[in-house]
Image 1: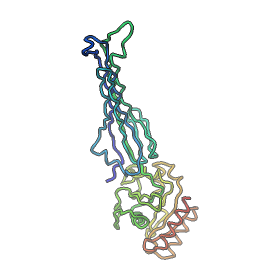
Image 2 (image 1 turned 90 degrees about the horizontal axis):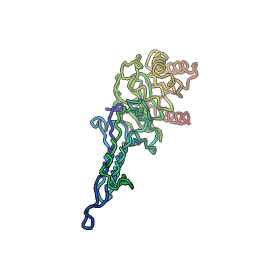
Image 3 (image 1 turned 30 degrees about the vertical axis):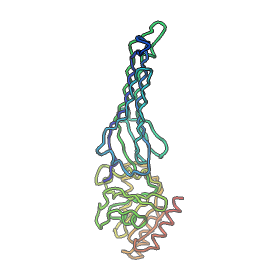
Image 4 (image 1 turned 120 degrees about the vertical axis):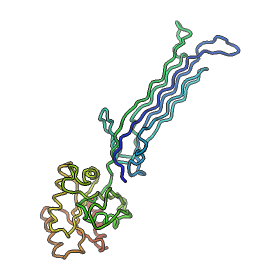
Length: 320
């Protein structure tokens, strides 16, 4: 099960309290103030990683807390600063502060973002000693760490997205092109979550079938349309066994426009699938429909190795 939306709470560490103590030893029965400062609480950082595919780790861990700073002690001993906490999330994760609506997007695996800062350690009574007050009895308490509620939303980062209506052959194509092992069967909605494989060194994702009304919540579309936003290229799969290829194409494009018109501007390849099930005349007829629209059209069959090899070559050219 793909987990791509979670809401979590984070709590940074509190600052340690300063100490209010006085020097006492065999040489001095009534020494001056020697209370040390408290340590700072730990910050919470978020950073991207390519080793995670979803937000599953947060399903049962909804509250994350950083360590608090250690309190100061006598003999001018300062409390230790707490270690910071770094939380790894998949690349493509959008983090929204539910209070301020500030959004941070995790785009790389080397830039940490501090989402909340730990409290500052309090000063011990030694810090308050002055010429007027030689023996202060008070010390500061550490300040509390920040608390926030965050909404995490994953948008898959794939160079190539396979899109189309259900049963267009996307999962079979992904399995043929890559080492991915999506569930495959000859009925609609076999794919219930995106699958990712590698086409050479490029991630390619099989986006679950869209249907008319997907942009308003019907079917599975509304859940996965957002994953297309990150792709550099969409391969629009249309099965040739359908009586009206243009109608199937327009259905998906209309849902794109309703969800986010910018999706219509993405580079696109029309891929007519299942050529082994129709005649050459039907193939040419379908190709002409899209070529008249100025579309880049390819055809393939998973049982035709030559067509698959040609598809790989053309996709690489197209992206470059």
